[in-house]
Length: 346
Image 1: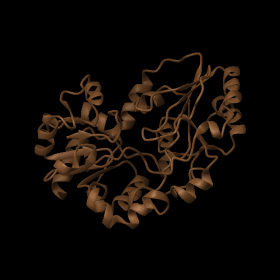
Image 2: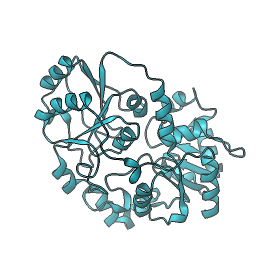
Image 3: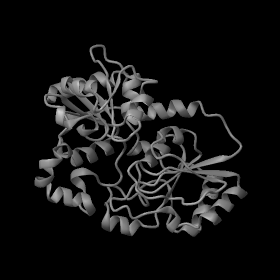
Image 4: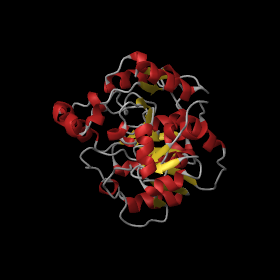
């Protein structure tokens, strides 16, 4: 059984489901919404809604759950006896799971005895965990309380998808900026409160740049409240990797999407006007994104337009990411390795 934590089939789960084979494994996608299932059926042989009779039946029968976040991506309450395979959806930069010490998730960790009663899936130790680099391995071992024996080292499938999509992109006259803010645990950030969007739009017009704004799937804020000629809001349930593959610059903040962009040699800017607030009330970091990565950081909305234009006109990757962050080697037998590891440890 395959599942994702959003309303769109994407990332590692999508690539493993659609393109990675294992002769004795029957692959079934379980969608959170009926629309999700309908969309998936264009590329997936079997897909069922989570609460349909077939979805319930196969969730009960499944020998393995492969998911992007938690077993609840599929149906934790029906997963008894199944092996758990976590192919986490990104390279952590902000602290996650057991490592969170500030904000809402710190409360969840502090009162874990209570959460274990009504949300036990949050504390599942996976039987196999995909890790894409030494840096990622250390983060996920700590965050999920697992030992190294449960880790499967491999190039992340989502990057193979991104590389393939990017190779099909044709050049356009307008340069494209993709803005993907990470979500705040306290839902405190909204773009238009930090940036004069009228001024930014005029700057984009002058340089023939288009900016696409995609909120995180669980973000409750409306980042752009008006219509602009060169700033477009896209549905937050659209596959973000399809958008990233076609952009010339990624604008984000504390999102793991920065790694995806850097791996593909796409320019990155971090827009972090709430950095101190984020550290104090939301999350701390495994590595400071503003100091430990080869990216331009901007802390003021007044400087954002100038930084975008400058980075697009002159981008080189200053640091060799392979020293610390670059993923492991590719593996055409990854799904089989994940299954074998899960059955060994389950």
